[in-house]
Image 1 (cartoon, helix red, strand yellow):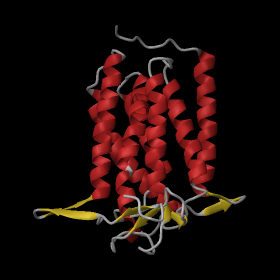
Image 2 (cartoon, one colour; image 1 turned 30 degrees about the vertical axis):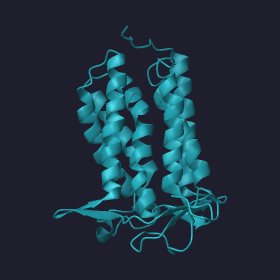
Image 3 (cartoon, one colour; image 1 turned 90 degrees about the horizontal axis):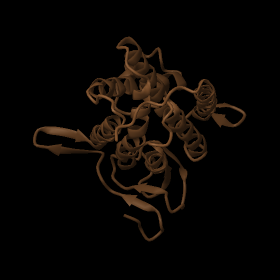
Image 4 (cartoon, helix red, strand yellow; image 1 turned 90 degrees about the vertical axis):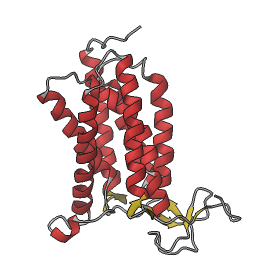
Length: 264
């Protein structure tokens, strides 16, 4: 809801009980996001004449690699990689680390199983929607907050278990910005899915859009260490990913691969 000051106010507890089980919104929305993203990817795969069965394995790789990669990148960024106790926790993950690890894991699986790289485009189409839904839990938690703000997209988490410093103040919310970013990217990519038919073209587009969006997003966030020239580690990672996407897109166009078949 939006309070009288114009900011968004959320008073939901980060966790809730279902009988004897304690469920975290963070984990629940990620699971729902993976499911919805997988359904979208499956629909797109079938429209391209691809077998949707490998997406079950790809989804498992994506979830596992994203968790491990996101945690490793976060601990490395904060100088805690060699602290065994720091590896345990349900907060403290970076999107870039998870994204890179998941992409590497999926690419390795496709190479080892001799499957077409077109599955990378299939995953790219479903990923933005999955991210948008998965980040809702971060909004509820008050995770990935930035500076105090009266901006109309500022979020005031009033529940005492929320992660923001003061329940009476609103902050820039990185989770909300990524909900909006993922939604916007999905809105761009979904209409283009049958136009960008060269293998890996959609992958590079989604990578570039996420990298550019997150570069600007981190001007409002404070959960990434400063690196150089006034930019955070996350922003420099985004710069590298934009370069990778640009080179990959150039290579895709230059080698002019045959587009994979579309069912009629």
